[in-house]
Every structure is written in structure tokens, then in C-alpha cells.
Amino acid sequence: MTSQTKYKRILLKLSGEALAGPNGYNIDPNVLEQYSKEIKQIVDLGVQVAIVIGGGNIFRGVSGERSGIDRVQGDYMGMLATVINAMAIQSSLEKHGMYTRVMSAIKMEQVCEPYVRRRAVRHLEKGRVVIFGAGTGNPYFTTDSTAALRAIEVEADVVLKGTKVDGIYSADPMKDKTAVRYTTITFDDVYEKKLSVMDLTAFTLCQENNLPIIVFNMNNQGSLLRLIQGDDSVGTLVTTKL
Image 1 (cartoon, one colour):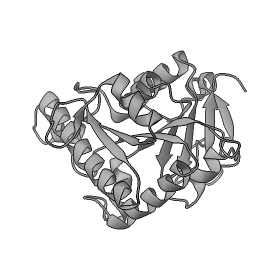
Image 2 (spheres, rainbow, N blue to C red):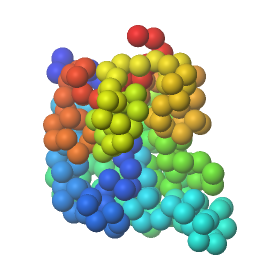
Image 3 (tube, one colour):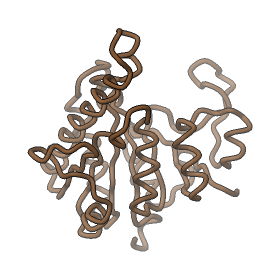
């Protein structure tokens, strides 16, 4: 952490659907390019970056179940999809001059390292971007839960959840034009108001470990850098106390 940055080590959670861009499926190279440039800006400032990426642009276990695929089998298929996305991000980041490691909760040594907490922390300390793939390695856990768990394990300062919405609103802003965006909100208020931030397991993990969450629009150029520099007007901060 330097005088230019508010956080030393972050966990960036990205959705697989966001990687798909306007197509809604597969991987959009333009989105990869934008995300890589945004991440490079903060890496160049000395911020240690870990990433968890979903796999919804390729396969989701829940949707697979609706298609007749066994839920556990479908979840493992979804985990493999996250590794594909992790490798895509890795390739793009390295093209922009960053050093990276993909670490998987499911062993596949030919393409990535197995996840070992101490090794992940060491990579971060050396300035490498660490991308966590294959979820937790267990079915029934979302990549939101993976993000919360890995952030706690590597002692990240904050979870930054990059979405297509610029924060947490009092209602769905796409359906309710009177919805108001919160700048800061407590974990308790999120529960009380039944707002959608992360799945309950992930959210509870963050609350119990006093790990703040910031929800922001990753597609707004410069938002990630502004957050790292302490711009409170970007996104919504979820914290223990106001």
C-alpha cells in the first residue's frame, strides 16, 4: 500500500457473465482487454491482486440441473468453466506485462497450480496476480463463497465485487426508477432490508470475519482505480459499522 492507494491487497470477484459481453455467452476479447488494462493500473501502483471468476458464460451447475444433469456433476462442470475463464484472464494479463499464477482447487497440474494458501500468499507478496479457479473444489458452493473464503485465507483488505450495476440499491434499479443507491451500508442493514449482495454463505463469512465488501460496476472505465485510491463515491461499501 502506498500513499496513492487505500488498500494493499484486494480480492476482485468477477462474474463469468460479465466476460461474455453483449453476446451473453463465451468470452468477449474486448471485455478481457478492458479488464486487463484496469487491473494493470492498480498493479502498477503496488496493489496485490487476487481474482475469483465465475463460469456462468460457459456453464452453470444450477441451469445444468434444470436440463437433467445431476447437480453435483453440474457443479463440477461449472468449476471447470471457471478454470477456462481464469486461463483466459491469465493470458490477457500477461499480454499486458503482468506476472500471474492460476491456482485451482481441483488438481490439473498441466495448466495451473494446485491451491495452497501459503504459496498463494507468497505469489501475492512477489507482485503476481493470483487467479483462483475451480471454486472451493466442492459442489453446492458458489464463486461468491469462493471469493469470501479465499479473501479471508490470504488476508485481503477488501472484497471488490465487480458487477454490471454501480452499487447496491434500495430496489432493482432496472425495474424501479425511484431506487436509491447506497454509498455505505452495514451488514445488518443488508440483512434487514433483504438486499441482494452475495449469496448468504459468502455474505456471512465476510461479516463474521469483519471483511468489507464493495459492490461496483467493473464496466465503468476507471472505477477500479478510483476505488483503490479511496474514492468513496464509487460503488457501495458494506461494512460492520458506519
